Structures are given as C-alpha cells and as structure tokens.
Image (cartoon, rainbow, N blue to C red; front, side, top):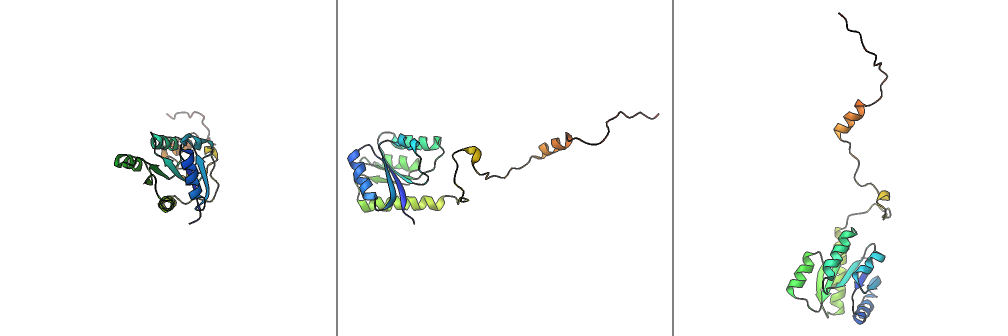
Length: 170
C-alpha cells in the first residue's frame, strides 16, 4: 500500500504535535487541525481522519461529512474510552476506537488497517479528476427515456401531412 495521508483533529496542541511526529514516517503527510470545522477549508481527497472524541466531536464530524457529501474513514480516540463511547462512535461509522494514551505501534497499525479497509471498499474511479462542480461531474448513470415521454415526442413531431378538412362523402 502506498503511504497514507492523515488528518489529525485534536484540541490539545502538545498531544497533536506528539501524534503528528509519530505519524510522519508512516504518512505522505499529516495535517494537524485543532477543530473538525477546519476541514471545510480544504477537504482532503483521500485521507484517514484521527479525531479526539471530546464532547460531541464525533457526532459533529459525522454531520459535517454528511452535509458536504464526504466519505472519509476516521478513527476516534479518547482518554475516556468507555464502552458506551466506543460503541457510539463505531455505530456512527468510525473504523476503530483507540483508548488514549496508546502506543505508537498500535496507533500506526490501527490507522493503516482502517485506510486499507476503506480503500478496499472504495469504488474504482474512471481516472478522471473529480470535479467539485456537479455540472462538470461525469455522468455515471446513463440517461433513460421514459416510454410515455417518447410517445409525447412522437405525437408533437411536425409532419408533412396536410391537415386540411376532408369533405364528408354522402
């Protein structure tokens, strides 16, 4: 697998720096963010999100991705990794949940397995760059004509026949 790209979302600057440092040899690049809302400034094309589960961060991140039609895999982590928090995050779509603190090897292997699982389920693309404008997106679904619309088109088609009234024969 090629080197993955990670987005780290953590409000603790010291922990964010430590995690980013641990991931630098593993990833193509690591984008450290303080808050999930910063994702809207530059959505990564293909990355794994590592998000601190503090307050409603996982819920808000899921809503944000749904609102922007993004499907990025994410791993949540928290010092309070209770079974309820873990299951709630996993039900919302997290690929994994890590208790904090965790070892560097556990962090790396978890992120890589989530990235691999997500890339395996991702549909194959046509190789064309994805456009952010829906008008320029490639037409994936072929247009299908409705039989009723086709009949209406035939009905209103101009014809060469004369529409002069015919005299009734007696």
